[in-house]
Image (cartoon, rainbow, N blue to C red):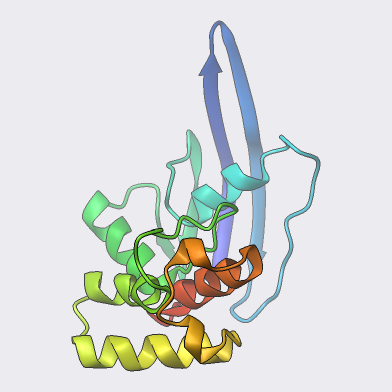
Length: 162
């Protein structure tokens, strides 16, 4: 369960204060599918960064299964992101000089998974997202945008986020 309580994120821009997330509260039960929609610049990405612990709120909190992220030490936030969250970034953030399969294996390496198990899981995930097997060994810059997105999705699922 994700519970967002009175979440606020402000930024300073010169003498102006910008509040892309302003007193947001909601609950999502596990297994719920939700969409965040809004105009460009309305705070969607900022909210997602707060939910994924990539950014810290100015005030309020995000609770995941009853545990607040706001006061969590950085080491625990890193563990949370590694274990419980999978990200697909707008620009994919894939490493261009690595192959598709190596990009998918990378988060598993950080999680301490054995190389053979990483390779097997990466291949399975790339098959699940329907990337042609001959493209598994291609470097990212040799794949189309849609193929890169598939690799990014597979990478987001690599550590079996909750």
